[in-house]
Image (cartoon, rainbow, N blue to C red; front, side, top):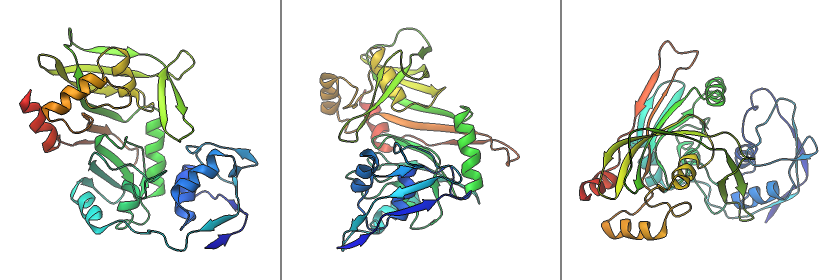
Length: 306
């Protein structure tokens, strides 16, 4: 084992807007991600002498205090080549500033507790300066945006804060859907459990969350829905769908156990939630970017059984 003594890092303009967890993962090579999240959660990492959460975004001149750490002498530092090739094959848009991939289900957006490599760590094998613009749940497939330049990342974050990135999902919901589209406006409150797991619940104390549900195809006891996010809260679609009595098929966290059991028996092996389309217009671009990620073969095959 080798060690890192207590140190202070000052953030410059090129480092601002990064999440503290992502910053530490990049800068503390050899420290397990689970330990990084633990020292953030327990307050051992301080920013300007204050405790912070993993999603805190760094500002210019922030002073980060990192406690003494021990590095494992043997640590897995590179993802398997097969994973790199897989994500490379899932690129659906690329230019000098941006990368958009059709993320497979089962791969996290970034590493964390118990996860060595996520999308960002895997793709940095090819694009070392790549940054995540936003997240997708590990179980969710579809469009995810990554930035090649810090200036582009800042533009994307501004659009995200102003809800100017239109995200459309496809999801299979339980039950017979009555009528046409429905807009759900119910605040959601995020909680982080001791395990580090994120979960949200409906609460008047939560943040505003707006989700638009549009029926695309109705079956006897399920409905394929086109869902548009008007806000970007954690697990928003999953929590809203469950709250209105139409949980997503295969959702082990917010869904219906008996319904999921029936769906598994019919052949569904995963959460049926897919980031289908993403549309936005960066100020530095002449026109909008409108990208669509088709459903994976396993979900298309499952729909045929219905």
